[in-house]
Length: 348
Image 1 (cartoon, rainbow, N blue to C red):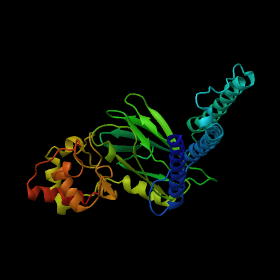
Image 2: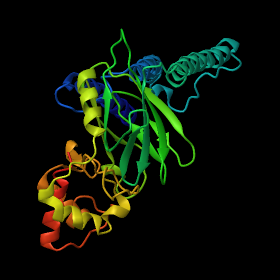
Image 3: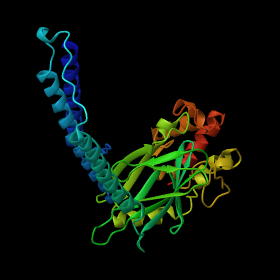
Image 4: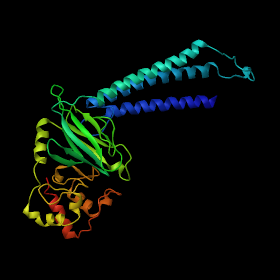
């Protein structure tokens, strides 16, 4: 009996702790921190998923409360005592009312949850694409993200820029999800649910952010050694800022004569086999497009800040930042390495 009561107490404590943690997580969110939070949806698909989750949580919470109350009542009411030792409790058989109750009620609960889920899935997956929507093709690679804007002629990597969506004049972003190698999963908790990227099987998703800011996410499907560092940054810009970003990304790479030596090293080594730089000889597709590399906040798919020191280390020894990465160490001497880094710093 003591063991049973202790187990019940442990369950109560654990449940309360989980609820408090959830509440604290929701309360601690601040738009300025950039921290991701599933309890703070900022896009229509995320809100639909959040509302469905809260509904399911409420239903299952009520079930838990009813069952737990009956369990406590049974334990207290029918606990054993010395007078009942060796006696068999009264047996009850063939209660039609009880059997109907524990059959019909669960069926009704499942039907309600199924209909609510189907409604949310339909609202998210079958939403019509308006004429003014932004189209992006997101391609998952081991272990980075490629973003292509086919209508805008823009190619970038790891940091997705999209415009904020005004409810009066909505500008949603529709993404076509592809994979270049293995299974990946695109997830920005505050903007949309998880959607897989599967080789030879295009998927689609959309989001319409309601405020500007930086939203963090990552690959949510184990895809190899560096799955945990396949990070995402979504920059939701004002319409004017997004238009300015697009204009900048549409420009060819800067041609600076002062870094001609570094450009020559870049174009005469294996770098051009993987990377592209607009307006130059480099036209690789295996690695990220570097035309506007320095316009990004991070390198190595969010694994490090985009600084001169990190960029030099990334070229010299990628495993120091991202062990298991498919980026090869270029084995350049110090002079060539410094020249390439100087050239990279002009790619804005």
